[in-house]
Amino acid sequence: MTRLLGRVGVCLPAALVLAFLLLTAGIRAEGLVSIDTDKRYEGMRASFAKGYTPSVKKNTMTLVVPFVVKPPLSDDSLFVGVSFEREENSPFVFRNYQKQVKKSDGGVYLYRCKIKLQRNRVNGQYPLHLTVQAQTAEGLLQQEFTIYAEITDGRDASSLVEDTDAKTESPEGTGTEAPPEEPKEEILHQPRILLVQSSLNGEAVQAGGSADWSVIAKNCSSSQAIENVKVTLGTEAGDLSFEKNAWYFERVLAGGSMDLSQTVRAAKKAAAGPVTLQLLFEYEDGKGNAYSTTETARLLVSQAQQAKLANLDFPDSIYEADTETLSFQVQNTGLAVLYNARVRLEAAGLFPEKEMFLGTIEPGASVDGELAVFAGTLDMDAEGNTLEETAEKYGDTAAEVIFSYENEQGEVTEQRQSFHTAIKKPETVELKVEKQQEETNQWWITVLFFVFLTLILIIIGLYLRMKYYQRRSVYERT
Image 1 (cartoon, rainbow, N blue to C red):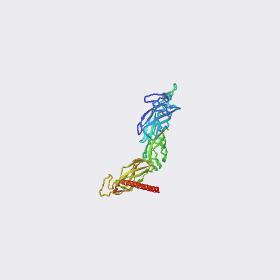
Image 2 (spheres, rainbow, N blue to C red; image 1 turned 90 degrees about the vertical axis):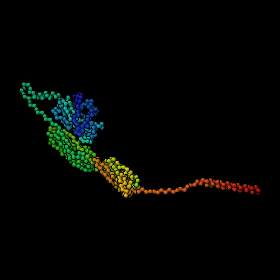
Image 3 (spheres, helix red, strand yellow; image 1 turned 135 degrees about the vertical axis):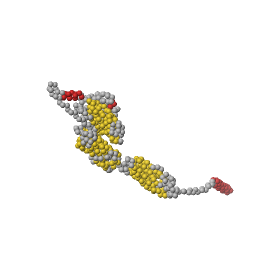
Image 4 (spheres, rainbow, N blue to C red; image 1 turned 180 degrees about the vertical axis):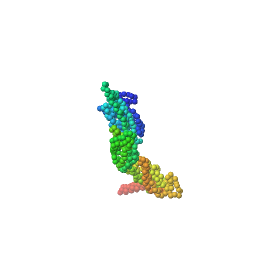
């Protein structure tokens, strides 16, 4: 049976008891990792707030701990390990219980661990130390949590005293003396390993090139040597290659160092950005107790920016006080992002409406742009003021189009492209308007025409009628 030891001291029956207390802060930040006490996850019979108890079966304790991290992690994963205090009659089997925990769809890092228990375990309370390591944008985050487990299904502690008394007391009537008390076993604490030097921490490795990476790890224990040390280098960046991915050291003295230096190479098409490297250390102390720990290093892959200003177009000449359009195209021909891209014009006598801001341009993208340009005179300064009255006002002018952009470090690159145009004096065009002759209204002519035509028709009609009667008169006489 176990009891969960909470802050309020609530006891619950089970085979083991856990009470989670936050004791220590991270190396780089405090309180950024916490345990989700409100929800129940797979493998949990209840949430921590409702008295979660781990399941025990065949001398194995199954521990499920849901962690919540406030800052975004670089690779959405963290490393969780368990260590034990080297106290006498510890119920735990000392092994490497460190695991990499990936972020679930619900945003929780669910750590599951099966801890082996001693068959002859003794009842009592025993601390477990959980170490959580993660890589954030600001650096390495490390926090520790202490868990107390109370064993109630093992041997009672009083039986140990009775066994000891039975061994030390002599049987009645025998007269035998009790054997001398055996010396207590020395408690050895876990020797720690830290990464004390990483020359490429935050430094850039050029894509298509290589860089020397100086890496030193140190055994921070002042009294214990570590043995049988294996170091494994891991990363999810497939565009990086290393001379070595694993090392072995038979023995590292107390305070001694391990040189893990090598050359790092980046592929030509390696993605630009930060890369997280994990160094897993597996080792033993002088008594053969196994440990593991993970150190994190970061480096930066940089891509050479490649871009050009193309399709520049502006008229060969422009009249003073006119406005023409300067058109162009910006092309990102590389694999790196262009930041804060801008285009501006500089020329004597020409005044662009504004500087064109293009912002961020992704690899392989192109952006078309236009600038409205007003024409002044050659004797004007950048503010439009006349410099010298006797200076030449019109003629050829050399213009420069400046294309600038930045990389991730804010370093500015400029490209300049020139063209020539001529500023001309405005032409005065004399407009001659011919005087139109005044049109006369001749409607009366039309009226006279129709009157005349009518008279003609009447005369013809009278003539024909007269002829008719004359012929009729002659016919009648005959």
